[in-house]
Image (cartoon, rainbow, N blue to C red; front, top):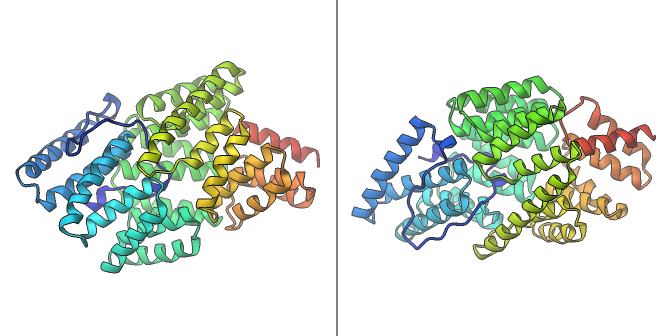
Length: 434
């Protein structure tokens, strides 16, 4: 049951539209046609129907409650309707924990949900509780990895990942090892681990294809574009209309300046699953083809959506400040972006992505000296992401450290990686001026 829950990168997922409901009224919702993979969807519907019937006849049926929670969490991931399915899963988890406060599955399920709601401290606490109760179960260590990565405690994340993979080397543990290697600058090692994750999974399973897409992104960072394309193509072949693979192909099309194809692919992904990164991709393409009116309108749509989401999220204890900062950057409102970025920083001062965001906002505000300590913290794990390195080079240049600036800019561009066109152009221009 736990195996069906994808927990690799559970922390990067976002919630979408809110559903009105009454306590106890949850049930499986219809999928969009493009997500209705016939065999999988038929099996899930049948299983859910049986479980719901079991629970209706016997509300104390712990086994059925746990199985239905697993389905709800995975459905949230597949459909993007995290709000509805997180609420449904939390309700059922509460029922289990009322009866069995030390139930391992219920504790870990609740931890997964809290992590997806960006409630990282709470999620880590529950995962630690589960680990103490069941110290030889790999799954709890995976959740501890996720929470510690988000909170910026990378040493603790590494220790938990080592323990996890020593207990059970599988898709979940290999994918975490891959991400930690990426964070620490070992891209070839990250690719190797992600290959093992993919090989350990079942082709066509959402978990497997998610990992395959992450491998494609790693290839993008080192400029191996055709390898990235191959991974995205395989993913769409194994899982038709897989939106994250479509978005990957859209990034490559943008990189190759095939903007018509990029728009079509991003739009297709956006129509299947609500993820603001797809709309951000569309916005970027519009700017590249000088359709600023459409780009501005799309950026405002993203911000409006995030405002609504953030307002509703606060009611449930969810944090969206990091996403709000990026949404405000998208419309050029760097004052508000800084406000949200610093709020998130106060919550997670050790996380390298949060520090990078704060640095970028200060850079855009031409407050280069203020950006410097944040970009240095973002670089502290030796992450070699080309976007991070480009941003670091630009900031070092502005504070007068031309030697460091040149080194970071050269490294960021040397393999001709896939990265935002505006950032590439700025980095290349700055490097030429040295």
